[in-house]
Length: 112
Length: 112
Image 1: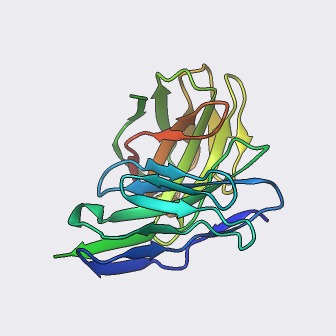
Image 2: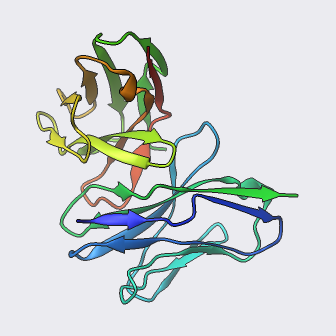
């Protein structure tokens, strides 16, 4: 069935280091991928959404590229900040279906 | 700013009791969703709706009913609450394109 997989449950990094959060998906339909971020005690909010195949999309210093060949949409940032500490969800929407399916989430903790 | 309001924000219910979680959106979005969030499971879709009068089952509908009496309102009903339904519940709304959903602040439900 259609699904999203995030392999890291918890990532801890020191401020200033780069980060990559993994996201892979399975679907037989044309996919649209999203990253949502949830800060402590807040609602999830859209961080960025996929563009066309192999095109990078960026927002607030984060970036991701949809690679249909490998069914991936990994989230990256070149230098994490303390304020990036949050829960990050990858989500999938199929082209004919207005429903988001979320992965299990990755908790990013950035230390001083 | 898109607005999704959930009530109550916190609820303690007894096993076997009936619980109704309410959601109101002022975005004039057609689509509305109920998710539950549990550690290790991410956001799981319970029910969703494409408009007033419609409800659809998501991935985990057992033990839950939904009601969409109007464009603005979408309720989640637990007829016989069980401790396994202790969770944080998020309501969300989205437009017909499905490019972004906007979440409410969540309802923390504890069933004792």
